[in-house]
Length: 258
Image (cartoon, rainbow, N blue to C red; front, side, top):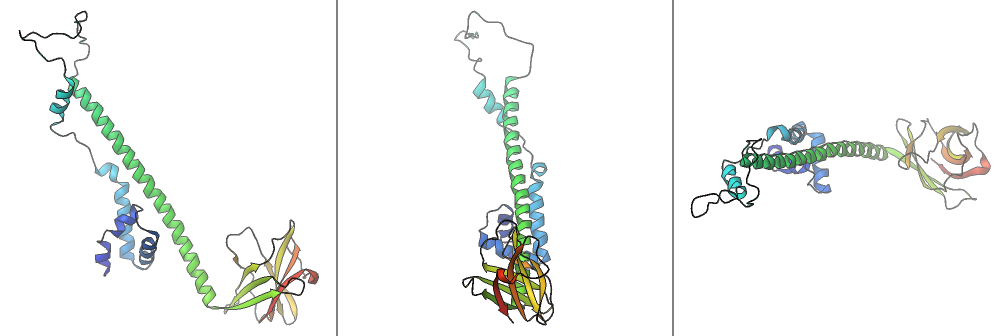
């Protein structure tokens, strides 16, 4: 299917209304990212819904006057002698302070209800579109982040850091790419006690080099650390919060050589 057929298929309108499945939405977002024409079409669809309030007007139908009059004018029935028979014999005086026709009053009420409903519908659609745009931005950011992470993982060397003798079941992984960037993925380490923090070390020329602290408060387990050239191994120790200048060997949990 070419792009023009795809745009005219109705998928963009369904996307703007939030009626697509997650799988279909993911496909469209992938197409949007790589095709400016589709991006423009989605933007225009969103703009159309936002302008719905001003582009659509309600005009009462031509038959509305007679229909409302036939429903509401109950006092025009005449007796057999042609005289009007009031419903209440004791109260026959009509109030004439307002000469606005009854059918027009009823029509006004009907139109107000109609406009109120339209306003609600438009407001609801605008809120949905605004929320959708926000969710779409967040999803696009997540997709971009995942794509960057995937590229990093594919172009990096993975080093397994296995538990030392005191902690045999512990496990972590380090990714080291060609530009010397390092990423840490903790697989199985207990939560650091209060006031303590895990610190990553690289062994370069037989000496430990500080690679930064692992933060459990950050989103996601894979975290970027400091860069390093020609590492021979990596290790993780449990240190005071903020880290130490040299590793506490008794608190080493995992280690892995390159």
